[in-house]
Image 1 (cartoon, rainbow, N blue to C red):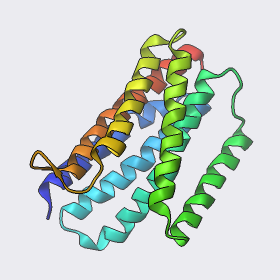
Image 2 (tube, rainbow, N blue to C red):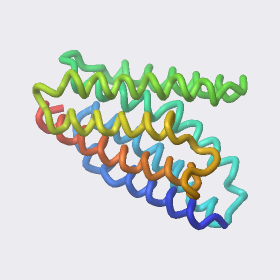
Image 3 (cartoon, rainbow, N blue to C red):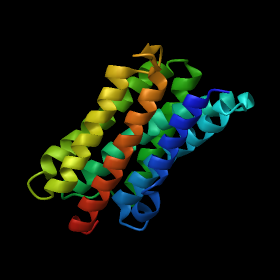
Image 4 (tube, rainbow, N blue to C red):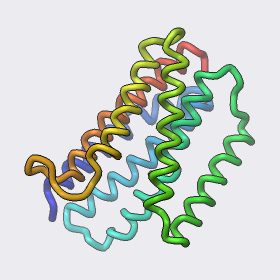
Length: 200
C-alpha cells in the first residue's frame, strides 16, 4: 500500500470529476471537455485503488493512464479551440477526431512508443488550450485566464516535475498528481465560464 499516492490520485480523481456533470449539460465543446476530464478521473480513480493495495489493477491503471495521456489533453485542446474560434467542430468531426486519437493510441502502445507519443500529443493539446486562452482573453477574460492557468500547470507538472524520483522528500508522482488536480479544476471552470458566455 502506498498511502501518499493513494491520496494524491484520489484528489486528482475528485478534481477531474468535479465539473464533469455541469460540462456535459453544456454544448458540444463542453461535453468533449467533460470527456477529457472524465478519462483522467477514471485513470486516477483506478490508480488510487491500486495504490491502496490492489496491485492486480497495475496493468489496467497503466492502460487508462496511457489513454488519458493520448486522448484527454488533445481533446481538451481541441475543445478549447472550438470555443475560442467562430467555426465549430461538427459532430462528425468530433467522431473522426476521437477515432483518430484512439487509433494512434493503440498504435503507440503496439509499437511501444507511448512515452514519446504521449509527450508530443499532450504538448500539442496543451498548446491548443493556451492558444485558446490567449485568443479568448479579450472576450472572456475570466474563463480565458483559467484556461491559461490550467495549461501552464500541465506544463509545470509534465516538464518541470515529472513522475519519477523525489522532490524535497516528496514523491514527484504525488506532486504531479496535485498539480494536475489544480489544472483540471482550472480547466473545467474555464470551459464552464467561456461556454456559458459564448452560448456553447
